[in-house]
Length: 317
Image (cartoon, rainbow, N blue to C red):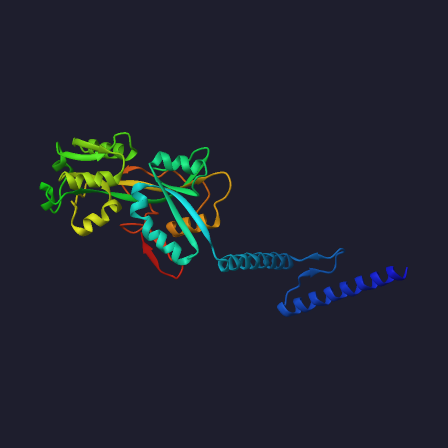
């Protein structure tokens, strides 16, 4: 009985303390939060609003604590990503540098391959995620659209068109060119674009990757249509020249590909977010518009994608 009495007394003291605290709170904000005319006590409309607000504040506080805790925890280890050759050679060196500058204990290891090979490596877990062109959602994989990369008409300095300030698509009619393998999606887009303009070209050599195509254009004093970023180095040094063609409005969609099952590692999530310039999204993306026409609203500045370096600045990869 004595133990029960002590417990009852403690309970009464607790209730009394809570009641006094509530009264002080009501006096402080000048609003009645509890309807004391009813038993059991119920919250007033203002009380419900207050409680909901406090719950949100507590939730946001815990989330902020977690974010700060994660920020203070340094990343270490190896991030492995699959990438098609043109993306890996054009964009990744600067992206790797930006990422390792933020996380010096991380190593980023690229696995190069064709579009199909990168898709396979992503699906079987060989890589953390993949960077591909013309991405598609599948039963195993999802993608986030990264950017719409412009295609440019480029030629050797020895080519007849190299001295022209601009050309039309009609100027290409019947011209001998170096192109992509006809099985590739980008080759089909180029063919459809030219056909729509009533232009037919003579493809002399075909390649399944940008690097080989660029080397062939240089070696054979040729001309071709390639992704803009794939020839940054060559156009900067004068080894190749971009020929302005306003009618040529072809873009190549690039995407970040990852497995539906499981979650991205923190390192993969942060690297993907750096590429996107925003937190990487997991929801299903609508397929990008392909071929001729306007660019995606998410397209980064001309020449590459903006990468947030974490100190308020960005680089363009």
